[in-house]
Length: 116
View 1 (cartoon, rainbow, N blue to C red):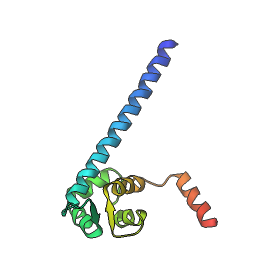
View 2 (cartoon, rainbow, N blue to C red):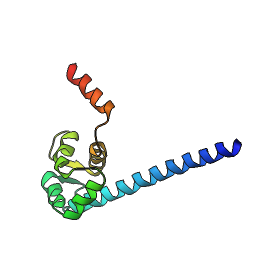
View 3 (tube, rainbow, N blue to C red):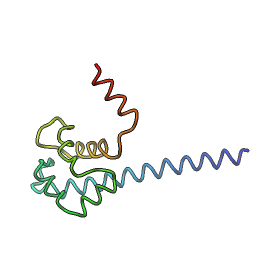
View 4 (cartoon, one colour):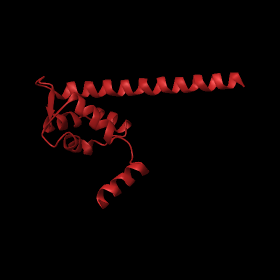
């Protein structure tokens, strides 16, 4: 029985390390995307710079593999306050927030907000 708990604990730790590694790799790739878009090197990108990078088929495919739809790019700017500039942190957070499908809890929260 102790062996079973030991294996389960090891599997759990392995899964946590793997999830952490995947998150770091994804964030590193988003950082590379940001660097590609930040042509003037000011540490912020505007919508047109971002859309220019999104014209690249490989970038679109990579974002799609992360469950991020390129057509949601403008919403990343909206989430960061609605201005026309975002920094690296805002891009990482925006892409992470918008990737994947909505969960039931997301929809319930939205319904609560709309009903209030």
